Amino acid sequence: MQQLCKHFGHRVQVHFDPQSGLIELPFGRCDLAAEGDRLNLTVKAASQSELSKAREVIASHLERFAFRENPNVDWQAATAE
Image 1 (tube, helix red, strand yellow):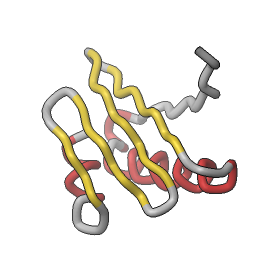
Image 2: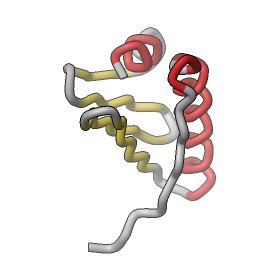
Image 3: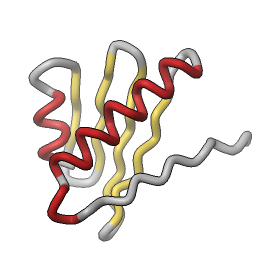
């Protein structure tokens, strides 16, 4: 998470600590939460196309930086509360 946030921090607004992070992309935002051996990502965007773009950008960078861990990115639609 830290490496991912630092990378994005060279281009966009980023906030992070050891347990959580926020990446603010021009087309959406990604909240990160470290829980044990898991990294939970929540992506939000104004439109479906921006959501798809944000997911792709975040997933591709995560897979590149965490290639040793062979991450499995499994996006799920949010449930209405």
